Amino acid sequence: MRRVPLTVRQRIASTPPCKPVGVDDDATGPASGSAPEPAPGPLLASGRAADVYDVGDGRVLRRYRTDGHDVEYEASVMRLVRDAGVNVPEVHHVGARDIVMERVDGPTMYESLSAAPWKGLWHMRVLSSLQKKIAKVDAPPWMLASTADRSHRQSVLHLDLHPMNVILSQRHGPMVIDWTNAAGGPAGFDAATSYVLMATFSVDSPRDKAAQRVMVEAFRTVRGRSVIDPFLVAACDHRLADPNTTVDERIAVGELRSRASRE
Image (cartoon, rainbow, N blue to C red):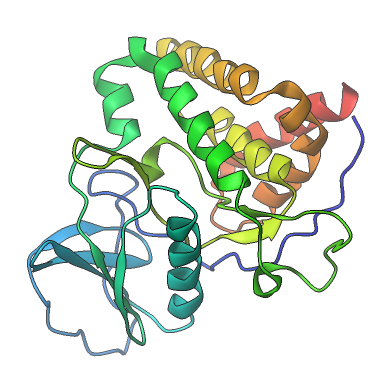
């Protein structure tokens, strides 16, 4: 396994993006010492970093609880990939800590998998297809790290593409959400990051672990081993550098990295 240097722009937030209600939902509210802002509408979803509210007229507001999140950058990425044909909610307005966007209804791919695990191969094909479409979008200079190799084509990378970040909308089809971590770089790195995220996600029962292995290897096959494997070690290092990675996940990522480095 050759080590591929990481050239993507370092834009990883200190906390992960908002997740759907009931998925990794451990929000603690506004930062200590800050006055809570009035809710702009009914709360739809809440995660570690942000809350999502229904503001009517088919729109939602995603509000980060603290400063420091580059919402202008996130909105610009969403507009870029949407214009390129990727299924992404339309952005209507950007504020200091807010993004007002199109409301998309439907279960997440994770919820669909939990209800119908036998559809795992179909879901992995959908996820792979979404990532291939994203990979076709050229990353503009403002998405690239200063160390990026600009003599080679660089793609838009989602860097957090997994079943929790895909909404299966009957109206629009599968929609990709949570573009907080997006950057520019080699497309294979994004695919490898998705593989690492899914392969090392903490599950409890032996049955769930077996299903997880089958699912992620299906993704690796459908997306292409030749695309993913050269970037596996770098993707593991990227995951280990995330301070929000849990202890169990770090152990799993370390084991995966050891296997990948021997292949």
